[in-house]
Image 1 (cartoon, rainbow, N blue to C red):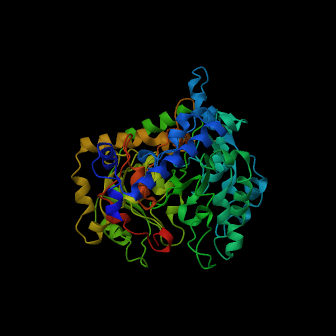
Image 2 (cartoon, one colour):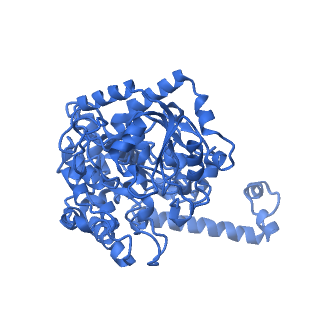
Image 3 (cartoon, rainbow, N blue to C red):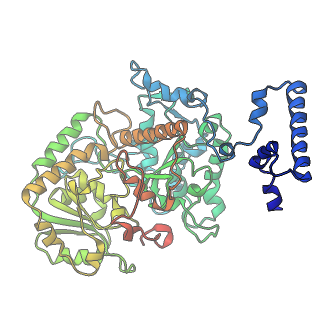
Length: 536
């Protein structure tokens, strides 16, 4: 068959007119058949169907057209969020590109929880900590450790309330969601789950999250981007919202594993290195200034302090956790003449006294910050507030967490000592810190002090004049994230090689960088920790 078909090729047919290669009967019949069918289709398409010759020719198969082609993108004006993007072009509008729309949630998702404050924690009466817009009761400056104003006994898990109240003071709120750069969901997710972490089944733990998502996905604001322009705040660590199974014995809720929630951005005090839908923001400290001057006065005071201790540590050992280095850190501190130790494991500890903690940090050059019950500790932010240079032992304690609020170049403001070196007793913390020159210590301390404004939450009942606090930094970072996503959608940009399990690497990329590869910290994040990521 192949041979016979080749005899009917175009060159053979051309030779027939010269009398060479007499055509076979088969070739003649085939040629006439092709001709007749061509005339038939031409007549039917052009004369009956009203087509054109050009359109008829286009029906012929073109090899280049049979290959997959990129779909033509719609014009920018057709996207429902284009109006929000264009607000930045109005140079006379100080809120252009910065508008936030806040969902009006039913009180069951926020305010009703505060009315039932005694139920918010099994171990602590949270009623006093939810006062003063979430700051807690004022701290008296009896020992002269604090400023005279702006200091409160703030609970470390109070960010839900503080952030929502700060949002009420945000200068660019809008009732028009079509011009919003991002959409805020004022759900007190942290307070909600804290009620049910112990002694409740998964149906109770998930109830509010499921009800919230069910309400959100029906809203017209949600449909614009499928929730990718939405964000909410939970003042707890991410592992409280990442239950891995539907067993009652498993920890937390499954909020962050809900399909809809995966589209939103959730701001937590500790994020997951292996997931892309949560972002770490600072734990609240005790300092909540009402005006810029309060911050400047505090910073100047931290610069001038005498610091007699080379390093210090406040914390308790973790004897039941073989991976913990706290026991060795405590031993090294006890055996050093230049270390101040505040032990937290017996009875009424001074670790629960804000005055005692801040006083120790203020008298130290360096403050040791090993992992706590998870990667992170509130203590890290308390120490930096005191102008103390933090010493971290795991990149998940700060560097891969607070990328919005802390410099990428961590050596500018901190010291890193691998916890593996502590485990293997390769490093003397005292000797390592003494290697840093006094001049370099001064430069690093100044960097820490300069970071203070962006690490604290200002008083929600007022507004700083020029300084940007932790709230401002977080909101602008969310806006930048949503804006970039919208621009990428319009331009058809996407990263086909994105791997969510390496999300921590993407967070460390500098502006203009898009690809990740092997990293020096890979061994620290090689696999999820036990207990859903919690360091026990």
